[in-house]
Image (cartoon, rainbow, N blue to C red):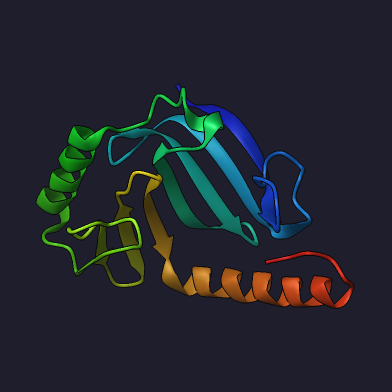
Length: 160
């Protein structure tokens, strides 16, 4: 009952990673969007693989981007609050509660740390996400992208 909605290599610079519009493609990082899965109640999820190993599970919950306007996973404030409550019931209180630049008066970033994984719920009007990462693998992927961008910038290619 699941369906692949898209796939591509992580884009460094511009582009989405699926649209082939990025300045630089990180060939060792594959992103696969799947519809019909259940990631904490969210049905459309992106899976990230570094060197063929899963290191990232991400769901976009709300976005102001035009291409997301009809996204069935868009959550309103009530949906966000229910998701936060569900995560608290399942995993206990967050390890950390923070504020990003869109937070306003109340915190809006909830972090649960586990042995080698972390789950982050970010709720803001611009772009809300739920992300599960394997920290050691993400560290390797981040080092790879940093080194790749440094090589590309040395050639005069835009990369970040």
